[in-house]
Amino acid sequence: MATITQPAGPFALGTFCASGGKPFPGLLVRDRVLDLSSALDGAPTDMRAVVARWEKTLPVLHALADDHALDWRPLAGLEVHAPIEPRQIFQSGANYRQHVIDLEVAHRSPDDPRTVEEARAEIAAVMDRRAAEDLPYVFLGLPGTIAGPYDDVVLPDWAAQPDWELELAAVIAGPAYRVSVEEALEHVAGYAIANDLTDRATVFRRDMKAIGTDWLRSKNAPGFTPLGPWLVPAGSIGDPGDLRVTLKLNGETMQDESTADMLFGVARLVSYISQTARLLPGDLVLTGSPAGNGIHWGRLLRDGDVMEGSITGLGVQRTRCVAEGAA
Image (cartoon, rainbow, N blue to C red; front, side):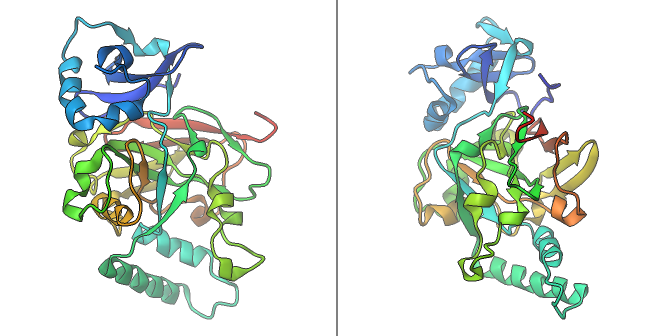
């Protein structure tokens, strides 16, 4: 197992298993884990069941974290899985101002008469207008993309330009439907790290440009969303609009930006999504990725690459890329 980086706050949540055993929802306090399937009333079998009763369960978790007489297990003897299996994944695109500007420049047509400076200025004006008009861009992802925080990432043989996109993920607690911006954060149990991998070569349809983006093809390969390692309660994080998002590729920093660069913060995204869809316990709201993706650097993912993603207070995930057929 990878070296563990401690999350913020007195405890975090995760999904664990003994070697070859059945996964269980666990409470992490430093280097020890408590099996919540036996410690909580109702015997929750997974983390979704834990967050579904979040308002009542959170005080109990605080009390359990301070109880040294319980049957704690050493973390070193357990495997760490994705902290939660969502039923729905809502993904925010074009949500970091500098990231969108960089992508616009990277995807410019060779026939584009604009200078780089003119292209940047035009897309910056579009971003500012979107923010003022309160129009986030959100699409859906598949739960089958979720992988563990230390799992290998298999790069499909059809993915010509696989890219990284480290993101802050908000984990929904109780159901949320048509909630206001002011109410939205009350429906967030906590936060986790997500790496929303994308094959840049298949983002845009070539057969008919009017169709637009093909998120099914470009983002939904199995394992394309490493999640975790932890679900950290919102109260331990503070302001989700003031966190550092950092991704290193083979030890070299590629992304390093504050969530302050988001056009739409967590509350606005949750509220916006809830006007159309009913958010359910355990659902993920991915908040977009900052500047510094591979398409910007001209360096896409390949076999053997190691990604290390961290966000303030949420720990570190480490995943190795493996070409399909070599896994």
